[in-house]
Image (tube, rainbow, N blue to C red; front, side, top):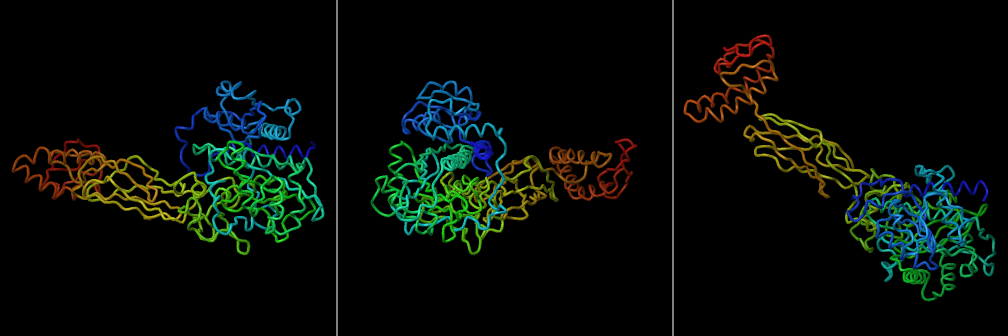
Length: 598
């Protein structure tokens, strides 16, 4: 492999490591208790002695059951995964596992020399050499690109019976058939012929792109792995008479139907045939879901789009995606990124981009009313959401918006994260208001207003939150107003954001406002507040027990607020005032005795 080839695999490795290492960009559910801590570990290559893909997938199931994270299966001999060394030691020698390695492997040293094994090992080595660097920057709007992923989320007329059989939920194990289309010159001119290097590069790109989905599932406590089923262009079944790049994208059924016929599926149109093939693949490999990736070859200087200007696209919830070796301005090096996006469509995710004249989303309502999750909305659609954020289904960024997890079956509601911060303690006093700033953050964008409610307030206490809703983000002030009869004490207040009912709690301390007892003198404002609190207790608990004491308490409560006002305005100054005289109280300067009486 030349320098360019080694650099290509290194970039693939960076992307693959991003798939394992990039943290979840959405607020997503926390990993469930069923996601063992043993899954955390280093990036590893596992070699298996199997001769059949189904056996390799059974080993995959075993590894997952023991707490390993399997991202890519390249059957029958290789799995790429994250696994703790202690678990690796226990697995070695079981279920066909020959070895687990964390260091680079020389492909020539292996006893298995099939192309799938060699390419998987190259992919693993490139990732190890990259040192676990960050994810590549989003290349969608590259300088060379002139169009977005135009019209790439397509629909089949009507929902077909098999719509849920191939790809209902993006969890568990998924078989991905890589169909490298080759023309034989019997109909069109055979203008382009796949090379081994081009095939190997795409195989690695696929693994890198799909590993990102696995990492996103893992961050949510879900298991997701992809088994790559390789149909190289040298396989006779991949040979047929059409050269895809010479046709319109609307004619993809011409070559797809013939390839399916070569594989033994001859009934119905291209959709029916690929769906039947996918179901057969599921059964043969003992796997949960399956879809097909049809890849047309268009090396330079061939056009980078079909004749109608389109390039990569998928039919939402349907059995296949059609892509090119060079997809418009993305280039070969971003093939994995394009496939990552299209895989979202296969599992019922909608586009979130919009560009006039090119297509995209046009509604923030139901994403796919006829799909398995008709209530799942597409509220990050930039056509109708001015706060729309970049993510995989909008800008091909390595992130998920709040709604994609809902659309692909990872959650039952929008996965956006909002919450109230600044939990702790706040204070309120009779006849006044205490305020604390509560930051209500709706992450990842949503046009859906989030409103806030407060519970646990004591009697005669009210609250207000300004602003009253967040759309899509906001921060506001929660104001607690304690009335004159609010009971003194400490209360647990709960603030809830709807519609998802995210909550936080904090303590509310209600204290009394007013003057001090008749026999008290205070020194400075701080002392006054403390003394006043004691005075209230004295009036309530002692004086109120007798008739004279009750009358004194009545006058105390009548005049004490004004006394406090005078105290605060005359801090540090010796004060004799008619109102204070009624209470027998004076304010002493800091240098005087604390027992200065009027």
